[in-house]
Image (cartoon, rainbow, N blue to C red; front, side, top):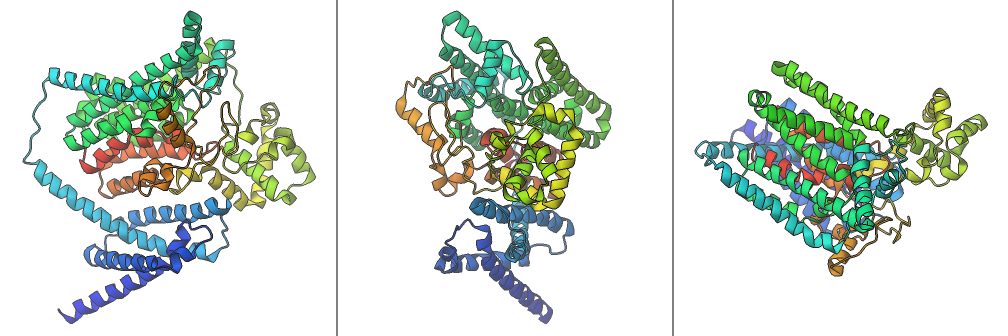
Length: 603
């Protein structure tokens, strides 16, 4: 070994020692240890962590390209965001507040960002090596062509298999999970008094089916059950199409079989397949859109020559937007990206985007006019400002002048402000006075800005604590804790709205299975199992998706970047929502097999 090489290795060893030591010292700042920090610092466990970090960092520094500026920049940005989420999340979970004056926060942010960036680069190099080996292997393998009849038979079997696997749970929770605004949607149809608070397409589908079946049979339960069966058929069809698509794209049989059993039995999939919330159909439409975006990026010429593919793109995008307003925001943000990427087919791309947006506007506006639906509500769009004003009023009332308080009470009465819940905006926003706000918007926008300039960190904390379940992996979702609904009061977990709202009534045919799903929904059970718990965590799955997004961006696989970007845009819109619940990011679970295939198989 030459002297220069020896000195280089010595420097790298010293750097690895310092980084591993600093990382071990700062790691407790990103761990949810509550008040028992000694459980880590005064434990042999910390020594094992240090040895593991020392080994990993040392090996990584010696094997990766230290001069790859682009790779380090992308890895550094991801590591910084992930570290910030962990450090902020620990504090929000413990005390509901981030103390931005805590020097340990900023030191830990710097140290752990560097540590995670190094480990991320090593993971990327490993994944890149796997891709090269798979590419060489794939060059010598040709998938046999499947006859059309055999493919159709396989799809039918898949479709029926999923329905049969879901049927016992359907009977156990009969007539299904009629929850999350379901009663409001049914009431609109039953009373013929419509508004645009909920998507009118879903209101008519859900409420119309229940009312029609009740009129014929006299049973509301049967009406709810009929809607659930229709939804099961749609979801099963969506998953069957995805599995067929994965096969056509050359995804391995092992991944497809695992995906089939995942769709059939994983509790989050089953619960939402049997849930009346609009999020289920929204996720199916978004899943179809992701497949069309993949084809659009990977096979531009073939996609734009296929009328079927283009029609599916328009249909999936329009349905997605019709089912959730945040789908509209995400799609509008996606449009310039698609126009920029598909420069060769810019006119056709523009026509497709225009067709999707026009279809959404025509259907949505047409239904509103035909049904004489009332509009004018602002609180959904103003969720974050409402929470910011309510939090500041509760904890820093001294910054409000008498005039400010009078103005605030014009749109948010005192009885609403005292109900401020950091994790849930509903108690406050439900009493928001839309008429007063609409009469003089500038007055209240000025109030919001004036108070924000006085207490910007209060505003920031109000937003962070209202959304951190979407980006902090260790969050226990308990946003409805203490809230009483029709048949129970939420306790330590609000993971899923296990409920049958009126006019439905739970009539379980398999009580023991019904009880198992009740525990999953309302008790802290899966959170107690290491690793397995992350499969239920919106924050945990988000960081896995973001990791792959950063990786494919680093590898310049831009046709895969766009589908991931679409999911991330949806995620960004829910950060401005009323709370954090799995249903708002259901695509994380519905799309998981596709995400894995995109990473593992270069789909």
